[in-house]
Length: 443
Image 1 (cartoon, one colour):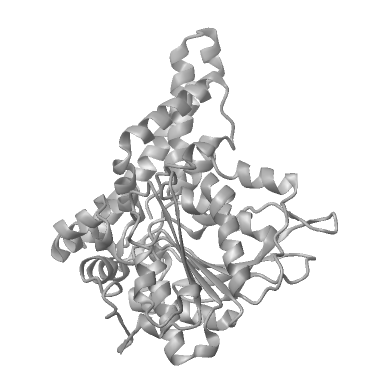
Image 2: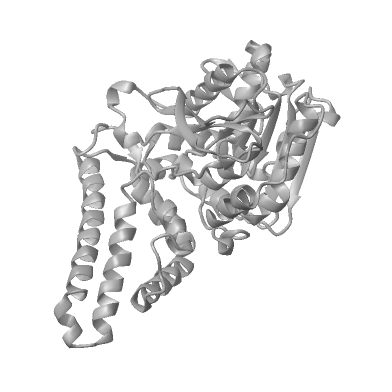
């Protein structure tokens, strides 16, 4: 009950701040205040609007809200989100472009389970849809999953990926973004041993901690300093009575968000101050760059306690993937069994979450894979966010990844076409340029 009280207290604080914001916005915008043209009323209303929106977003799962895709037939094709495989802890969803023929490229995006929803990769999806059929892993908020559904740790996550890959067939190309990179590598190796015909054609690992010890960051340093007992005592709480997962042990999204913000507290504080002034001056809008970014950034989800703790203990502390001794469902996975899946790693030169060296370490582990099926790339000026969703991704990394897929998936000629102006605008509008090289979302 002590941990449930802590969970409810955080939710109460969130509700209270949202209510204070709404109250301030209402009081500052009373028509009668126009009789006294004092700047403080505008500032009060602006502070209230920004505060209400910020704390309100923390409890909301964002919509995909994808624009229609221009086709070669000169028509715009709407995008429908449909579920391909449904699971207790996550679904496999497909972005079906209505009225468009099946594409030669078929891509599975493996989204992180690290505090944010899969919609964090919205701009990545948007950039790939004109040239590929795209699926993505849509992980569920742990607070909404009843305790009766059981546990969900790194082994269960890996088995989910195996099932998703089997469902999509061997002509799929997998792109794992950040946190799931080591587990996606393990899932591919498990398929190589147990069901070779279901292996994907290519595997692209973007900014993932395959070997956290290869290059130190604040994340790896924290993992070394803290004990598992300290983590469980300070980070784990039980879901309160408001949600279907009441009693489930989780690493709360609100607690994760406080950690994210503390990593760049000054930058976030300045961004909020600038937005308040913009609202007061009437220069802000509902879909400006600030709101587009923070509507996503502040929307957080709980992750199961066992997944969080097993990730820290087995991936970061125990280095089970890095040392090729990861066990799934009683079976030790051998990364060296991957012999036919082409593997590419992508890293950012300014990535302070998964530093250069951590991801490319995967290639040395692939002892059974020919060198001509291995590739690596480092984007010198890209931060963690920029390597999968910013300008570096759009301009440099995305074309290289698609070329890698084409070269290793049996496609005889490149099918990538230059996006039409409307599609380019949709991609650019979806991601603030200010965050292209030094994104602040920690995955």
